[in-house]
Length: 255
Image (cartoon, rainbow, N blue to C red; front, side):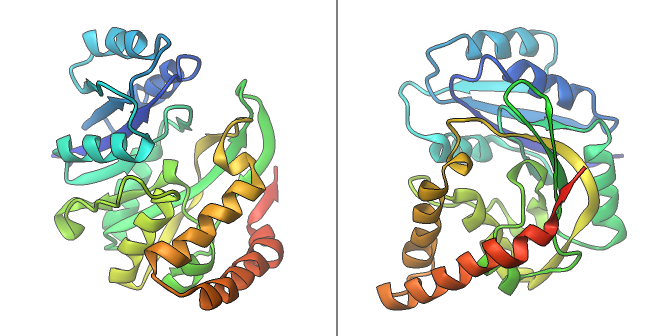
C-alpha cells in the first residue's frame, strides 16, 4: 500500500488562489494524502472556500487560528497535526503538476533518500507562464545549500520516520531555508527530481519579489540561525551574494 503523505498548507487571505491549489492536489495520480491546512485568521473568503472543498473530501482538514500569528506559526501547527510517513510542503498560491507526488515518492524510494525536491516553473499572479524554470545542482550538498536556497518550498518532501517532525522557530524569517539546512546537515547531501513538478506563483507582495527584504532575511539566517558574529556573517553574506549573482543564474532557464 502507498504510504500516506501529509501536505502542509498555511493560509492567509488567499481566496484568489487556494481553490486552484487544492484542486492541483486532488488531481494527483498519487492519491494517499491528507492536506493539513491552518488558516492564520483570514479576513476574506479563504476559510469558506476551504470548507467547501473539505465538505466533499475528508482528506482535507482545516484548523483556524483565533488571531493572526504568522505563516511560520501556522505551518508548525499544521505539522503537529500531520500523521503521514512523508511531509510535503505547499504554499496556498502555488500549484503541483498531477504526477508530482507519484514521481517524487518513487524517486525517494529508488534512490534510498529521506529528503528530496524538484525543479519548478514560474507563473505570475494570474497563472500565466513567466517562461522561467528554476533548476538545482543534481547533487546538492550542505555547503551548496549553505550559500543558496536551491530548494523550492512547494517541491520539498521528507521522510518523517527518518527525521521525525522537523520544527523551526516560527518567528524566524526564511523558515523554509532553515528547515532544509537542518535536514541536509544530517544527511550531508541529496538529489532533486531533475524535472519541474510544480508552478511557483510570483506575487507582487511576496518576500521573494523584494530583493532588499530577501537580503536582510538571509543575513539573519547567518546571524541568528547559525549564530555567527557580525563580521563573519558579513563575510558569509558576501559569498552568498556572489552565489546569487554568478552561480545561481546558471540554474535559471528560459523556457
